[in-house]
Length: 223
Image 1 (cartoon, rainbow, N blue to C red):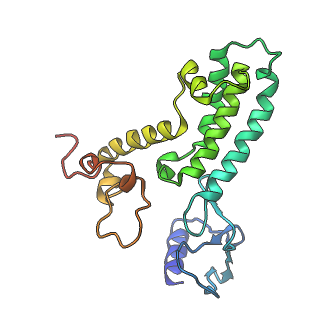
Image 2 (image 1 turned 30 degrees about the horizontal axis):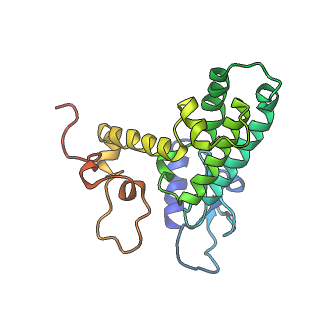
């Protein structure tokens, strides 16, 4: 509560107003907890987000354990909705060229379902496999592929990488740029965890080799 009071004073100082009715509180923890403390902004109570619900921040859906399950499921549903909207342009009666079909996917659907993937790139394979299923369905529709054609052949014919590969590439590209960001260096963002007590969950601990952990190097990028 004391931190909220300080935050309210800072907002008031800069002539800004917090709306308690549009604010929520979420506790991120792997532990069980009951009866959370009531918190207030300007003497008005803030609602606590339910344990079994996610909270939305910058279009990221954050669940209690930061497992990214709810986020991926919501993005997956949105991806299937867009696929249904695009279906008239892609079905077997369509004359659209394959390169145009792939452009629709890489410009409209893939950015949606992989939004902020450098953050959740190390999610369980079963979650990313659901996104891969959506990509497989799109390719089958776009290529008007027969039922016996394998998914591997679809990707070979289109040159489109599997989503697990593409997401890992996006994370590594993002990670390599972190050492050029002053804030990331200051707060050691992207640095490999040390003295792990629990199973590694961060992308840099799972997807990178030890020799690749250079994002928070003390070397000045301008030198």
